[in-house]
Image (cartoon, rainbow, N blue to C red; front, top):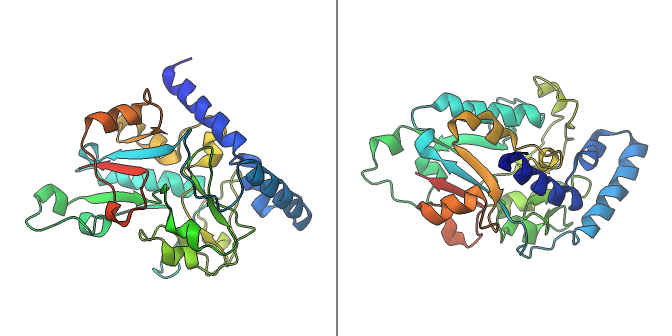
Length: 275
């Protein structure tokens, strides 16, 4: 068994224990009876994982993601490939309306991604390349603190900022709390706008907020996040346990200078960039 496989099996064990697994996700689009049973199951699993709303930073596994932009500059097709893989894996609808669009991972100019960084006399590379952005799965997530129903919570086993769609009442406080614009609200039924339905992942419903989940359902199956797998040949996105001194992401962080989006806010993002 190669090291990469062992690494993801280890993470898979953590996500399964935490209740971030395929069965819980599938419950979201089941029949009312199934959904109800699933809700109880999800709640029980979440409770086993430490309860909703516990925003304590995990001391064990803390999953994070590193984007090495040096391997993406001049390759917008790789950014698109990562985005499309995520969209396909999670049944993200294609809605050509800025107010209604759903985004889990997307590309944006440096000035938009890093608003606290100076762009005065920025390099040609900085000015002419987009950057991949997504939920930062913060260790101190403001979205969790403002959610009145605890629908969004930090999973203590993985550090993933997860969503329980059954608890979401669509108040959108989490969207106001997130300084990264990483959450989307379903203003309409997304199903008609899904180009290719993935039967292994549910479509969400109108009136709930959604976001990147670090592919918790794939991790539970021993797979890598879809965006990581999509650009694997380029080695541009590294995913793993930030608290494991032997993980690839930890070794790179210890060696390379990285930046985080709006780190001054104190949210402690778990997504890092080499620029």
